[in-house]
Image (cartoon, rainbow, N blue to C red; front, top):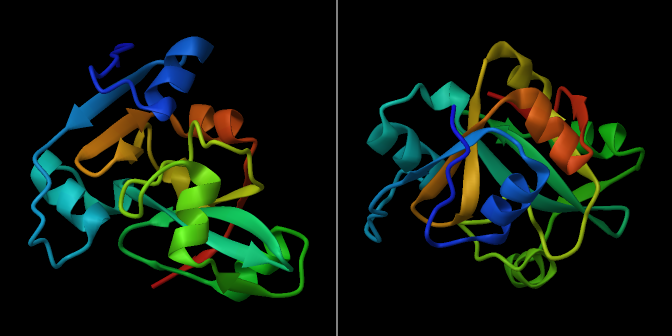
Length: 164
């Protein structure tokens, strides 16, 4: 992997470059008529296994906005997220609140370079791959990086938070 910066200079790419983290930005043409979901669209367009592409979801755990990073092929287990984050109850965050808190738009929320740092939990399947893909900070941009770097850059806890 190379240290590539996208001309878009999203906060995610700026954070990776500033930290000297090896990564590859993968830009693609996002189809606004897409009905399969942003992550599955990325996997298809980029020609990678969907299990290797992760989506970033925002939830509220006992009132605290929390980032959950799970494979696009699965669903977030809110109960498992609450437990992993040391809370009692998790609910999905309001999309507008997620956008305000992260500085990104839904469908382009990256776990990296968010406007405000949030507790983050990454699903344990991240360790199955040499590299994984997460949103680069806008629709039509994914960034490929090593799981260790994703976990380190986000200060994440790694736990079983996805279900099929």
